[in-house]
Length: 398
Ligand code: FES
Ligand SMILES: [Fe+2]
Image 1 (tube, rainbow, N blue to C red):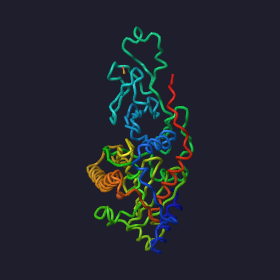
Image 2 (image 1 turned 90 degrees about the horizontal axis):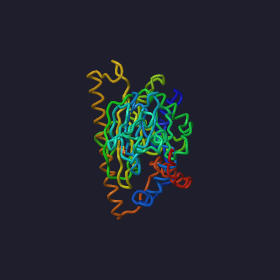
Image 3 (image 1 turned 60 degrees about the horizontal axis):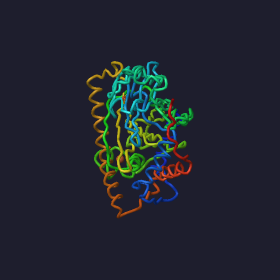
Image 4 (image 1 turned 45 degrees about the vertical axis):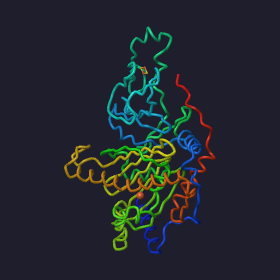
C-alpha cells in the first residue's frame, strides 16, 4: 500500500462517517441455507474451490528454517506435508508414504527434520521428497526403482510470503495470482518478514463460510462483540475493495480515525486508525492490528466442521529474531489471547447458526445492503462454481 492509497482509504472512511453511511450494495440478497448444509453442495464446492483452483494454505515463515515442516489436515481428509528443503525452498507433499500410504508424520504436527521416516516399515525420504532408504528394499522390491517412489509433490509457489498450491498435479500456480495492490499491501505490512509468535488449532462445528462471513462485516460489532471490539470501533462502518477471486481488503475504522480530522495528513496512519482485513481465496484471513497480524485459516473438514488455525505474526524482537524481551512476550501473549477471545465470540454464534440451519426451521439467510462484502463474496463464490472444471484426481508421479 503506497502512501497515496493509505490517505485515500482514510478519506473514504471519513467521508462516509460524515454522511452517516457505509459501503452499500444496491439491494439486499437472500440465499437458501442449502449452501451451508447440503452434502451434495459441499462436495461440489470442494471440487470447485479447493481442488480445481490454486489456493493459499499458509505462510512460508511458518516453516522458517531448513528442515522445518508442518503437517496440515487439509480438505477432504488430505494431509499435506509442507517442508523447507535443504535449498531453502518451500515444498508441499502429500503426507503419504509411497509404500502403503501411511502418514509420515502425525496430522497437524510440526517440527524440524532432515529425514522423514515412515512409522510403519521405515521407508525414509529427504526434504526434497526423494526416497533415500527402505529396509531390505533390494530383496523385497527388486523390480521397483527408488527414483520413482518419491513423495507426491504438489505444484506450489510462494508469493508475498504466502504459500499457494494446486491440487491438480498437472497445473501450476500462476505467478500473477495475487493482485498488485494486494502485494503492495503485504509489502506495507512487511508480511514476508513476520515471525510466528504462537499458534492455536481447534475445530468448530460450523460450515467454513459462516465463519468467514463473520470476518468481513462490521454490522455485528456492537452486539456480538459489545465488550471486546465495540468500545474501540466506529460501529457498522467499513469499506472494502477486491481485485478478483475471493481476495478482498476491508478497512474497519477505530475511534482514533476521527482524530484525523484534527491532524495534518502527514500524521495519518491507517494501521493505528483501523484494523485491516485481508481475505485470501479461498478461506484465509489476515487481521492486521497496530502491532501484530493474526492469520486465521479456516479449513473445511466437512460441511458442518471447520478446522481453525490461529497464528499470531509479529515483528522481530528488538533483541533479534524471536528472542523476545519480557515486555514483548507480555504484549504478544495478551494479543494472542485477546484475538482468541474475540474469535470465540464469533465461533459460538457460528455453531448456533449451523445447528439451526441443520434444524431447518428457517431455510434462508438475508444479507443487508451494508453487508455488501458478503453479497460480493457469494456472487464470486457462485461464479467459481460455473467456471469450475470437473475434478481430475492427481496423476501419479512415476
Ligand atoms: S507404509 Fe510406509 S514404510 Fe510401509
Ligand atoms: Fe466478529
